[in-house]
Length: 283
Length: 213
Image (cartoon, rainbow over all chains, first blue to last red; front, top):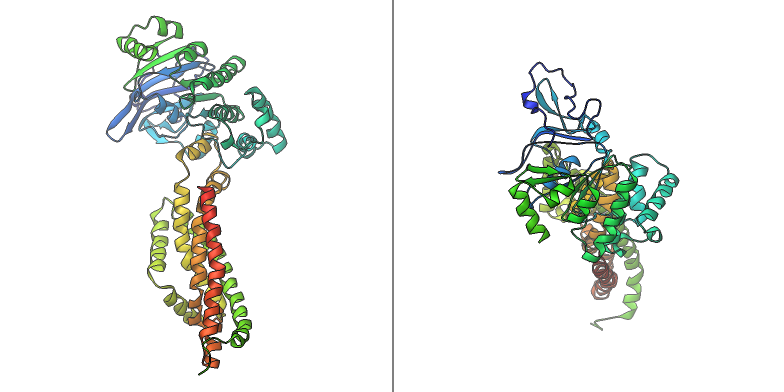
């Protein structure tokens, strides 16, 4: 079951300002991600309508559901590429873009947002490498200018990561000279170079040719096996979801209609909407 | 009357015209640098979220673009007595073309895909770094042909400096003609020099356009 909490609006008016909302998981553990009554609208279209859910540290959660069900919006909210219209999001118990103060929802200043955002990394469907930079430059850019590493330190780490994604020989190549699959592997290395606690994967194989998908998924599988990064995955690769994740959430119309471990979700889904969706996807 | 064209007179006119050509080039180069730098600043300032910033700048830009270069040259020259005419000329050319180049930059910046901004944000790059390392290098690449075309236009408009008595190439030819009561050779050579300079440059810009496309 999704661990739900009281909607922040229901907090007593005399709540202590700045008090962290009570943790929802077992006592003593703060979830990596917590959505409390998150609302997101695009014009008249309400994509998320009071969404509550938590992700424990080290969890690998796959979000599935038809397009327009709000999966990608969740990742974009976590990357602050979109702003929620209501509710609050906590990362490691810290309010991210908004917090409750004296029972009121107020925006968190940009400086504090950044300290939280620094713990979150994202890999995009369209890779979004910087085409004006070489492969290596793409990877060292943020460690140097955000984490303050020296060029030498950043390069050593970048080379390790390139080795890990199997592209050590492409270090000085222009990104535009690489295939889609190679670009996506560089993008994964670039995200990992920031040592994120949370990694968001937004349909990372959707723009790739089928024969290349396996390479990229192989890299991600290794990341999942060798690190304890919390991963939030939006994908249509059900086999990958099954291999990598320990929880699967089925979304429809911005709500979680079913939640289960992958085995149960893919072999014995209980909700009619899930059965319908999986039939359509798995054929 | 004798011949229509005298090679002797042409040879006589050449030195002052070449001296004028030097001034023409100088005004174009300095004017282009001013326009390219100022144009970028204008483009950046106009992206500000505050209307208190964008509105006045927008007004000035519209004003400069809607009034003739010739009027601006004469007006500024008369308003700033004591400032050398060439300095006024370069500054007015620069400001005038900055308003056009700012639009080229704006288009170039808008053409940088949204995904680039998003990737930069996902990496938490500081704002200045996003501009310097990600957006501007990509935007400027796309603007080079547009900037080049405006530089060529500016080159061809330098004869307006005539109005504030800068002796550029055209004025030099005029003066030679007035002294000798014959304009044919001098003006023909001015036309040829303009052609010789701007045609290869525009070919270069076109090649650049194709290469960057």
